[in-house]
Image: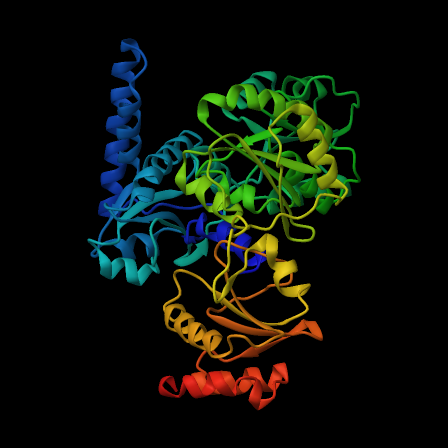
Length: 533
């Protein structure tokens, strides 16, 4: 499989399959609905409990989540359609009890509902056990788990936000209210700073004009980062110190060592979005299930992945940050726990490696190539590796088994011997390309063994075999297995493909014709093999 398709596959298998949503307006809840009346009653009880418990100290995490889950309305077969139809906006989580991802998302979804309620949002949050209430799930379009849908006047829209509490809140606020939060006091700025770990700040003397409008357009388009605005520099510096201008500024604030990023481009929607997209990640991103989709879809074309044990992270991260500063916005550095099978194994399999020590690998998505740092991880070696990656001077990496110590009737070819054994060979080469998981490969291999035996002793002809699951070469691009390729001695650049369904007799005829063998060159062998035909 070509590297580009593998990379796309890796990206998509780590994305949730069904998460839907898009823009809307304010909602009016029908106070006459029995289910919503029950919800309002629960909220009143919660408020009373909060007042009684405020003197008893901070509640436990379990109590917080339990209280949050009461805010999310339970839908059933008999009430789902009515709740959706009678409310302008409903955010619905479709789940099943046995789905691990649903279990992970449920408390975040509930906590987002709680936070939006504190912000006086009128958005109704609901959940549906799609296995127990299959009829309602089918009616509402829930096909995978977990699925988030936003219903606006009864019509489902696709959710395109992240999967943390904060990301759900930001997405919902942008789609159901104002896309930009306006701050008018230092206290509100302090509170905002306490609640958001990443955001885009806009300082404008007046909330009008073409540049301000471009800022707002960017805020509407972006589904992930909260945008905030003010027209007072004294408020803006609470969020972003050392602002020099008085009337026009945009910056990105993150909770990491490289905390502040100043926008210096022209005030156009696309430029602002590009600035946010290229600067939103920290110098070193620790890969997780929650951020993997964002990492894989990043517009930064050069990505360096470091696979290591967790107890090595602290030292390695410091080393990486020193190098990453030189390549900010040009290269992404991603640290991966090599013990996390779901995250590390798909990548390491691309290189045919086991995580025995820290591994540094890179992907250049400008030309869709992968690279491996063969030396131990040191600052100087990493800098040399990254410089070569940036300037396209690194040799691409292709998987290969070790060179075989001996060859049998059918020569074993590996990635690192493909040139010598096939492309640079003076002989005609009949190559079988196989994979261990291929159901037809075993039978084909037996046919090739018989074919090679038939032509024993024939000069200028050899038979070879390569396992494509363990070996790669830029001149060998095969998607279906088994594949039978004939490289003629006079033209190795255009191999002739033979159908895997060919009979042994048809294969013999094919080899004779394309190797330009005379009948008497294989006549004695053919006579000995008549019983096999």
